[in-house]
View 1 (tube, rainbow, N blue to C red):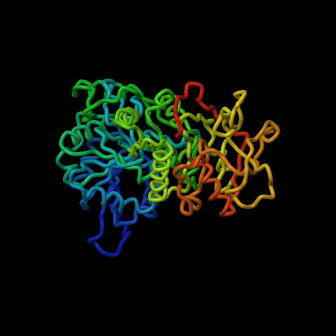
View 2: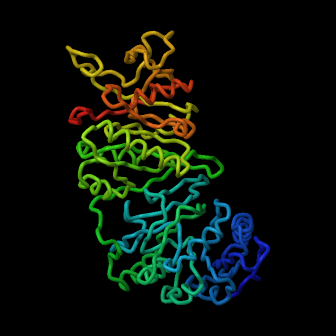
Length: 492
């Protein structure tokens, strides 16, 4: 077993700054050099590269334990040499998080439930956490395991990137009974999890040029691992009954993807469509979005049910007036989007099911307020004494285009000729069922209503947008399913 010279890089001037020892099991000189260059550009703090030349094929546990002996710095990072860091100053992030003495190992992918088969990635959401960019056939794809992109406790972590304080690694060490290159990571982190907290972070994004392989050696190590532990293993007090596939997206690490918050107000009256709605959210074909649902039911029963799906749920206040509680809930979403620096809020009502590519299509318009198309029934609220129930677009134009006073303008629903052939068209008002709103608009407009007035919050929102001289665009090619047949929600 040989080692390359320890290459110490100075990312900061003073030695008291964060210092990390990167320990690498190396089989490819070129990959190692590329990793060294990448780390030097991205880590943002002092580091040393402890590279163990392992072209002889010694087990990775022995290599990592040897690297640990040679490491000089108080923080250690075990990393594959075919990893590239996409996040700037990631070293500072690592050290800041590991300063919490409750944390054992920090990684970017793992699970809160280790299954009986010993393969952490075989379980689904909400157990799997993290995200990694993998290169497959020369193309990047983002594998997004978790739904909520906050630091989350897990029981095991994937070995492509494992960081901890040096004393943690020295206390637990890698088990050299695993003689190959598999299961060293889940064995190490599972043992740590029994005394400390292992954490998946979304604050560091990596590109990985391989996805591992399940060969004969893998199966032998898996058998050893299963025999060593009583599985399944979890620290969860309550195991969710429902699980969902994690997502894979086409990705370009050089491209900026606007950060989008997707969500809506809801209550237990929408229980009839909850699963179809959430499945549509989990399948959105866009790599940079988060979900927040605000439940304003009278009790906590529906809130608890939503939490079981592994999504972010907030609890709004209940009022007898539906519009009052909906508007207050919308403003909770607005404040969350602004405080967490989202580029857009995508208001998607719980009974509206969009196409998978809806976010990409809305963004293509490059407008501050843009809506997709969905349909609703005519009703006495809008049309007075309705003689015939008709399905019409929930989008409106003016009867008189010359009328400038927003609160006096009278609207008409769009008709067949307005929406066909599919196109992008200027409208005066849209419902809030499928509408993308930029942060610039959210900063200027709060959702509102007036006591005793018939107008709903979408009318007030559209009036405020109009008064700011911001166009509302409808893309009639985005056609959503509206689950209104079984709807029994009263709007008062």
